[in-house]
Length: 262
Image (tube, helix red, strand yellow):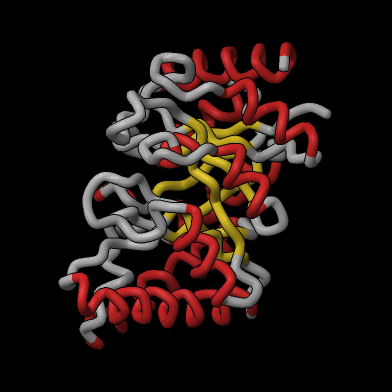
């Protein structure tokens, strides 16, 4: 079983098509188009057509990555409406470029603890709307787990699982670098959520902060993770969330060695 590997788009890349050409030239199977970066806020129809045509001709699979800072858990109605509109835009982009999945982040708990349920309710409500809209176009919504520092939602397995279970037909993007900032194990996440995980973000850190280091430059042990992936027949896509291009290539080499040896 050979792993399928890709990477998440870079802030430093001015044109998405340059990332895509790098992915194709270097034999990646996947690319995650990042809507986080200002240069990608408005993508023309011509650009979308070029992205679809180039990726399709070269058998490069695409994922759409919504902005990690989208305030999806803010309960203010006007903000919720804007968030849902943004998620629908991402789903429409996925449809136009031939992608079947959109990664969404859980946001922050920005209210006092006594009112935390309002943030959770807002998150679940917005995810329901995104999942329902995506289903009309055959696009999966993949909720990503967040790192622990700060007021992040879905920063532990219990909450992440509970929210995923609240929403029928939702999928998951497991970010193992984020898990490494908690006291929990990526293998535990993978074992618990194996039926809903569609893809995985891989990078490393010091176990405390979300550093997006190259593999084996932090404290995350990838060997047990790879072993578990093989046990459950999960071969990706594994999306390298490492920067810049040199780091992506190095990260792939390291991951492939671990996969071979594990």
